[in-house]
Image: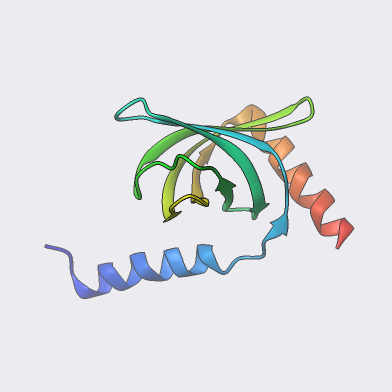
Length: 118
């Protein structure tokens, strides 16, 4: 059984992720649910250092672990992520858990460009 302090820590982490600075950002997104093999495709509407929102008509289940790819132009970012929020017929909020080492520089460059454009 989970302790109250453990539960508060989890809620705090989700809350911290949810309220991080978000930037408008459009990239093609493809998510592969690791357990079932289900796929979801869409376009991101915004992103932060810790995640993104993917607009997609077909959503995955909340808490689903996914292998994701974001693509903008000829740049790609590959990651392991978890679906945190699902809005039916709109999309899903995805939290990044682990970024492919080769993709991390691209991810940071995208954020830096978004910061400069504000």
